[in-house]
Image (cartoon, rainbow, N blue to C red; front, side, top):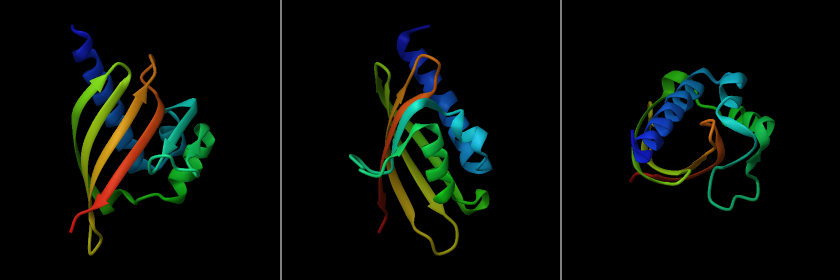
Length: 124
């Protein structure tokens, strides 16, 4: 197994857990995704980034989506060491917009995120 394959497998496993947490909105599912000292930026260089597991859980739940209100698809664009680059599309139900996403994800050796930054743009 190559290093690249291993990285892809780790990212895929993390993404499966992320989508499960997005669906469940359970604190323990969210917490399990991140290292204790992780940083989650909902936009680059966010001064109000969610920090540490408890801060990430609080921020996530405050901005939560309900499980049946969205669909998500993603593609791994590439990896560089412990960093992954993910392109996604989030489609919300009803009259809500669809977003194109770019995520930069840094995983530790246990497969948990130590840093997560997202960019999102509403489709016209």
